[in-house]
Amino acid sequence: MRGESRAEEASKLILGILATLLLLILFSLMLRLGRGVLGLILIGVIALLGVYWFKEIKKALKTYRPRIEYPLELVEDGDLLTLTAQVPGPEEEVSIKISGRKLLIRGGRGFKRIVKLPYPVKVLKKSYINGILHLQFIKEQQVVNRRR
Image (cartoon, rainbow, N blue to C red; front, side):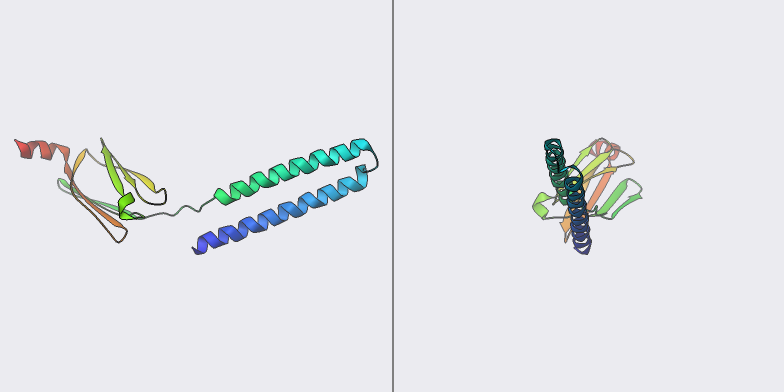
């Protein structure tokens, strides 16, 4: 939360500076070009462009979110592979998908992470407790051999 409030403060400061600069430019143009019709037209065009860019910058600053790094640990022990990762919830939004040697983890608030695995795997155990995802995998070949 503290990082988000600093980002909001910084964006407000940037917008304030831009608004002040826009007003100073318009005021100086009015003093220099305000005598004729062409000067008034140019001031109007510059004012419209300034307002447009001000809105675009404001929109871009609002959509900025600092990236949060969530820790992940992958431990290999023989044919077993254990993954422990912090994943934002709620639990209903946490899901995993294995495609070849890639593991896709999805969570709340748009969280998405792809983990490259050392070999193709099958899930043995899965649990999600207090924001921590625990997964235990076994090599794909071991699953085939156990069925025979």
